[in-house]
Image: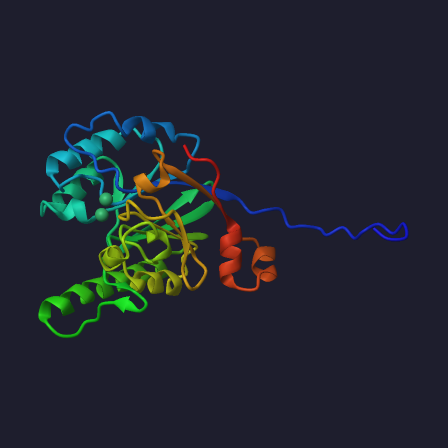
Length: 280
Ligand SMILES: [Fe+2]
Ligand SMILES: [Fe+2]
């Protein structure tokens, strides 16, 4: 205020509604893990609107382990969506594991998406396991031997699936859920030599092109929680050893018209729309 003139009052558009997303990956339940995760899943009632599981739900991809996972989440009172991880593929039983989880009420995503109506806000989640290949300056290419080409093409195919699934979501908030990492920032703490086995830049390109507001992944147990794509989409590594708690909880605000108009880029309002309160 100067010379007694009151400062102008800026009328603000009320903040948009929020959605509370609980997320964790790499819970790695074994046949002896019964009872460990059930209190976490049950305890999210009233604290989160949805639980997203970022793969590696089992130790060795055994059907018996998947049954434990199903039993542990069966009493959850909020919707659960998941992708599988590399460990869940190890027993060559990913189809049966998917069926067991589905019977327990979990929506397992692989190249597709789902939209939840949460209090009138449409939350869209697209998911793929993803794969490796590396990041800018240190990535593989589909060149040379058939096995090398197959390796990189698998990443490219799954990334294309992710983009397609994201683009197909008719929703207010769009989340990309993967097991492998889309960016190297959330791998910091891991040995650089193994980055190509932990994620791929193709996933980040899909996240950006698909218009995601948030990307969640696991797999990198020794990585870091926070990162961002080149397009400004927040990335969070929710591997359980990384978040250091049973479950991470993110509150995502639906961007208002003011958010969109006042931000210099799409990425800025996306970051502003994301807050991370205390975990469960
Ligand atoms: Fe893992
Ligand atoms: Fe993994």
